Structures are given as structure tokens and as C-alpha cells.
Image (cartoon, rainbow, N blue to C red; front, side, top):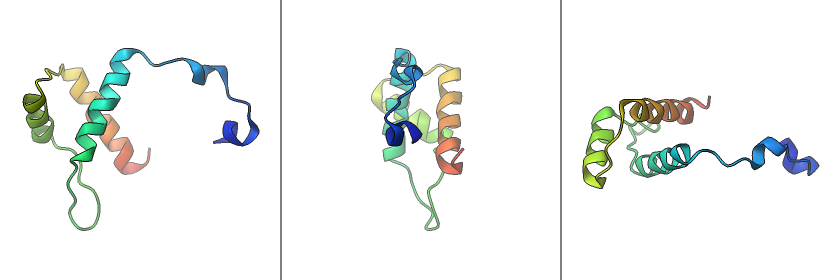
Length: 80
């Protein structure tokens, strides 16, 4: 990152994300840690895996949260 090389960190990076996004990120990290592989690379996190994780952890997800988790997964898998 440029700011690490220059030492000039944009002030926007000092703003903490809203709690819902922080929580969602940690949920994604939990799901990501259980990600399966097909021998050629990582598999996408499926809706059934999200449902099972949600039931096992007692987290009741709203539809928009599932959508955000799937979008994060696509970003991680596709690099964008």
C-alpha cells in the first residue's frame, strides 16, 4: 500500500467501520476458515454452508447479510 511506503495515511482510513460491517467481516472469516477445496483451488462458500453455520452458531442472518457474505466471497475468490 502506498500509505505504508510513504508514511502518509489518508485520514479516511482512520474511521472505524460501522459495527454491522465489522461483525459481518468476522462472520465471513469464520466461514472462510471452513472453506472447502476441489484440488484446483478454493470452492465458493455455498448457501447451504452459510445456513448450516448460521444454525450451528445461533446467528440469525438477514437476507442482505447473506448477500453481503456472498459478495465478500466472490471478491476473495476473484480478487476483485
